[in-house]
Image (cartoon, rainbow, N blue to C red; front, side):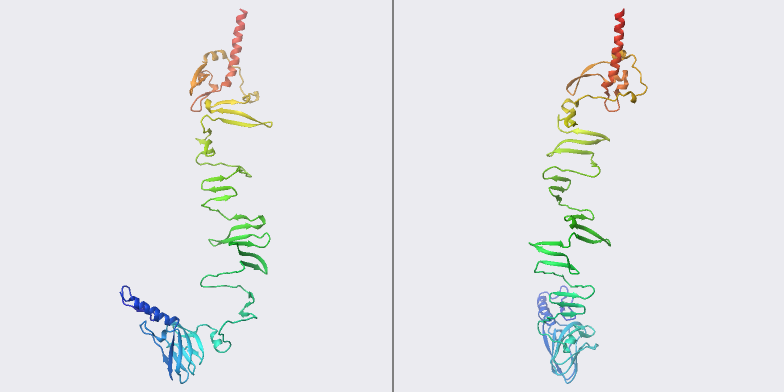
Length: 440
């Protein structure tokens, strides 16, 4: 693909073209074409008539490309300087004896008085003032060749710049820049006021960026736009020592540290002391895994388990008991010990009673033929889990007194305490027989 040319006749090398010579072309583009357009001046000589500048497809030097046009020669009256119809700024210095109008071939152009320099802009159709107030300056209102000092201030529309203030008489002040807005305060504070009242400031304190609310008990709010709705994402309450209220979830992938409590991943760790959970309602432990596990220094000592909706209390350490304690009139007592080294043998601290109030019972009858029932029962010794024991066989007792046998679980059990009634009546029957024999 052959080279093409921009409006300023900078040569645009085609893809794959000028192998071995593209550097020369590029150097000419930079050192000649671009330098002429942004920095260089050229003399344009008049000879009692119109002067015309043109551009051709070449990156070599061309007068029409130069930033500054220095008009010289004999004008012979007011004349025109015709430039190509492309977008480009010019600085035009008129050194002739007459006014020269710089224009495009079809435009009306702008007149540059003799002895004056103007900054103009070719918009591709016409040549106009590059800055609107330049015309006023060239008319003699003011000419500046250095720094402008205005000790009484400067007013631009309703903006007044005076001393250390920029004042706006009405409306909003907009700072609109193409790049960044930089606030550089040598005093280390950027102060915000409302009606001369300091409401807050941003400061550098020992290289820390500090945002401070200056009005007593007035909060610092962080606000934003959530899908078109204004929200307050964070409120720092200055009437409550800076208490922070977030509007929604706080996500902290690296964990959260509150005093000596660390919350991270699946753990809540306390570096020292006790952890108190104090709520106005109930404390609910909802474990979808079915276990609430108790540990001491990482070692499991027990757990609560949901086993097919049965509530299981489990001691995890071999031969360690489950102990129920309480307060009896100010003294700590062990009410019940379940001995895990004794197959769960239960030791109660005092009497074990069951409700036996007549008011709770219906269809009360004396046990009949109690002695026969006792005679049909068999007392046995046995070994269970390597330990010797005595008692009865539930399956045998069920045939005689089914009301004292529980068979709803995997294994049958006997309410030994409920056998007292039949034993009482059996003794009474036996005594009656003994008394009868004594009479004989």
